[in-house]
Image 1 (cartoon, one colour):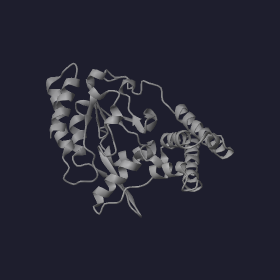
Image 2: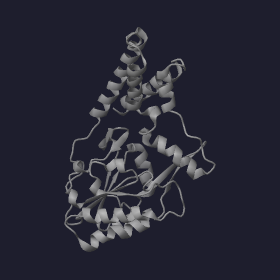
Image 3: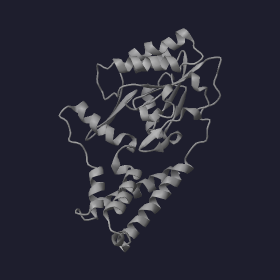
Image 4: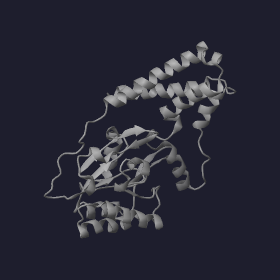
Length: 290
């Protein structure tokens, strides 16, 4: 399944190359798709540079170059709005549309077949935990640097402290849009002391509108006792009342977000509410004000 999925993904990259290179540059379809894949100008500052780059390529979900929905929408939109009826029905465009839709549908069928049925988690050990803390990975707990001849992962400051303290009171679930292989490599560094109880990777998410959505209702947990921490609010938009937004981490050494958030989350343990969502709202409002 993994090889089939990757093979189909490679076909999409070839399709994108065809759309951006084989169509004449004065053609409006080609222009629309080429423009959607342009990169921002790099900043002189390394962290600023990686911020811009990462916003476009994180998990290959938001980069228009590999966002099949974006390419297909551009193609369809331009065909309808900019081309005459004769042009739309020309053999060239009909063939192009046919093959692109064929690959698009095959790709989506692979995604559907790779999905996991809920509940995602085993039954909660109520003797150990009352609450569940769901954590994002990239730009929340770590940042992945990719340079010309090397690549490495940098753990966010206070991540070990954060996980150590909160794992005493919360069931810790890592929920990431990253692939399983990459997640395993990162966890070799991040989770040496097994603070994380469960790990959910990309196949547990739902890809929609250019975003990997994390549906907390599928965890098999009482949502009144679940909190998710993520640097992308769209990831928890199905249950925004359960979400805490954290600023993205791009390697800043003076970052202390996890240290401060740990203290905030301990308020839940101190008060032991039956529904933690009002406290989440208070914490989130305080973070926004800061």
